[in-house]
Image (tube, rainbow, N blue to C red; front, side, top):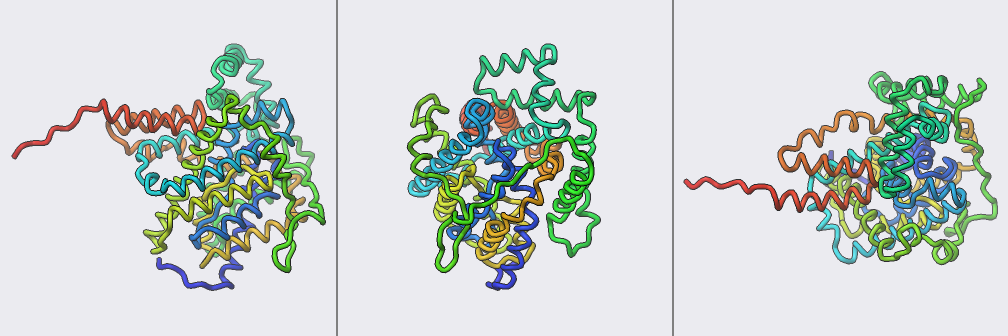
Length: 461
């Protein structure tokens, strides 16, 4: 495929298609971050607009992804913070972290990190992706097989030995946040007698449908149609019957006076109090009271984010001849994360699935991103239709995207020798600690194992 010629009509159509097919993901990934699904809807438009206005890629779409959602939640200790301070305070904490990740992205661009990122070891990347995928599954399963994540926690807490194990990990191994989630995952999956019947059925059926339906739907249907259909069916079921499982819930109305002017138009976007977020939120406390550790974590977050963007851009360069600038995409990442901080969203990154849908839908320029963003912004008052959407269906959307890569990790299985050890060590550490720690230790594993590995002797002719 060649680089497309600019066609504004195609961009408008593809932008609308992207807006429609991505809505369930916005809500689902917000749930992973740890705040309400409604916030995923209200913050997606502004962040994507900032991305579309600064990226050099016509196809690439960006937003909160399963990995960035998981990283933000684990880096900030989302569950414990929300339990202690409430969701409103947690949103401010997440917003502050997005500002720091945005700043780190711009600093990485200034020091030329883009060239260094291209040398990231393959086994580290493969292991990291698998570990993150395990974490995503662990975050999604509670709302799939149980009425809520708190219900699963209650079941695990009362279980002999397992409850004591979780308590020990929380008390004595604070860095092992992933291990707690994995224990919850394994116990929940292996004890079906504790499952909530209706949510479980809805979860399984939705997962199977999303994974299998593309083979049977008409070819004219855009990618993501299966997600819309599964979500619509689950929502209709919830509205028709007395569904007792978790749902998206009330979506707050937008203040008609909120927002800012953009030329002759007004964007109805609610902005955070930036001064309060930057100076009154004690985000350093989540990193041992150290701003140095905060910047280290934010820099690692930005670096890992950029690996996703780099992979997407490199793919489009090979397949479509679209050249790209590492520094520009890092700046675009920084701008979008800065906007995420302004609207109260988790940091964003490039989305492979949405980018591929964008290309398939006929996108020819960044205008498509801007159209999608504006559709989300101006259609927000009508998104209350998703209030009764079961979280079990949204969990199915998440699971269907990562299940195969967790069960059959092809990239890891291809590795041989020392690379095999590095990949799996990185993956397991990422799964039982956090993505940031896992990626950092993965690099350590690479250098240590590579140094200790016996050097192959060259034969003398």
